[in-house]
Length: 241
Image (tube, rainbow, N blue to C red):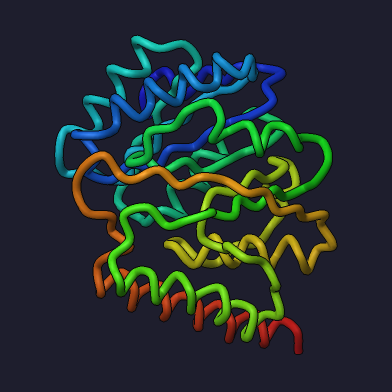
């Protein structure tokens, strides 16, 4: 952990956690745009970059950003997956709400406004993508199937379970989460639903990745996500009994 991760700002509306694994080419531009978007909205917010065991120069880029930009902090850990990286960031956060923001997606202020407009009105604000930018045919099929599978297994009827959501930080910290990878996103929503949390959906844009191939496009990641979701379903059923 760098020294910047130890000093948390107070009285923030939002903590944005940016998990980063081998994102040296995109991290700097994305975080600078994210900082600018937050400032344009006038939103009191911090950015916590979690370097998830990157093997390229991501760690150095993250540390430089924390030195150069206000309210940007860094946490370094061994590679454990996006879910674990997000949870590590939330443990360091101080905002009223927490969000996971992809390191490969350059934002503008209007991308964040649908969430911030509903702060204080719900425990969970679920972002529903209007379209899937940069998706190949296989990814589009998976994007159609996955939320339907989540509905079938857990009875959770939300349109988009794998995108950017905002959670009340204190409520999130009370959840017992078992998944470290992508399935953590669905697990979080199921756990919130089961706890009686208030959940709202908002329409949002998905901007295309600036470079490279998203990890979710890789067949082995898809298979690992399915295994994790089924493992959570089995655990969830045992808990119910």
